Amino acid sequence: MFSKTSLEMLDTVARLGSFTAAAEVLHKVPSAISYSVRQVETELGVVLFRRLPRKVELTVAGELFMVEARQLLRQMEEIKAQTKRAAHGWQRTLKLTLDNVVKLERIKPLVEDFYQTFDFAELQINMEVFNGSWEAIAQGRADIVVGATSAVPVGGDFEVRDMGMLEWIFVMAPDHPCAQVELLTEEFVSQYPAICLDDTSSVLPKRHTGHYSKQRRLLLPNWYSAKECLKQGLGVGFMPSHMAQPLLASGQLVERILPDNAPLSQCCLVWRKDDNHRLIEWMVNYLGDSDQLHRDWLQTS
Image 1 (cartoon, rainbow, N blue to C red):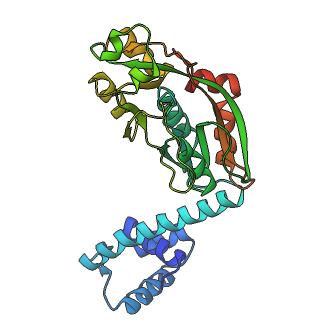
Image 2 (cartoon, one colour):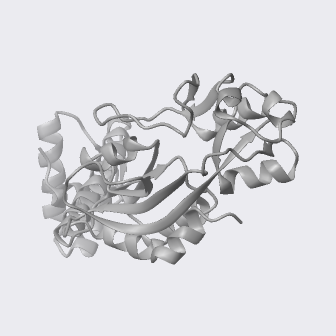
Image 3 (cartoon, rainbow, N blue to C red):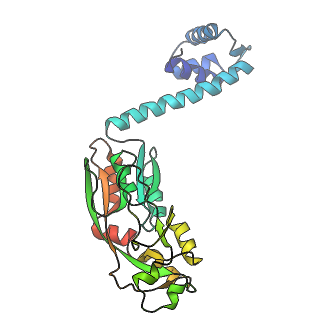
């Protein structure tokens, strides 16, 4: 209904309170400014400016109009800027998924550095468990996944970078019956629930934390709830070493060795191949090589 030029002209008149002053700024004659204002008022069917002997001032309707007009001008500028950024490969949002096994200490500096680097982009962080991470990248719900585990169960146009092995420790509360036995057997451990994270995938086959085949599971959504259940003696289970070590050091959990070898998980960084999404390129470079990824997200402090 109104051009950007006409809205900017009205904004100038409102700020300066004078057709003459606005004309000087806009390099027009006062009569042209007065005529343009009258045209807008005619289209709206309301008076925007009260004409006084030496100045003009906004009416109540004019004040409301200018609030909305200035908001519209800001939106126009943002649309223009976003369009230019998109043409050069800069999207507005980067979708980052963290597998629930990774350390979270790096989130704070990562977020701070991202928002200091880009004054227009937003970061969306989600968490998934096991094959839910692969499903997120396959379905386009994630641009990058940090800590995806096991073999690649899906095909797609994405890149993979090794993050090294994630170590697991078998733990339980100090007063749990399993903590009172030095040589655990499969038969004895299977009497007690296995604390397991529930795979967040809905299409891919679900995977769960290591447990014996005859052992009932207590399926939980994340490691926060799993740690609480372990500390309260509700079950036993494998926990990533970097998560378990502080709880072992404080005496809230104890470690026991099973006759089987402790499981290891191969972890990796996964990202969509998209030549027109430079935020992905920036983040992949920021996260670093395999050694840095392992140190920042998987290694015990």
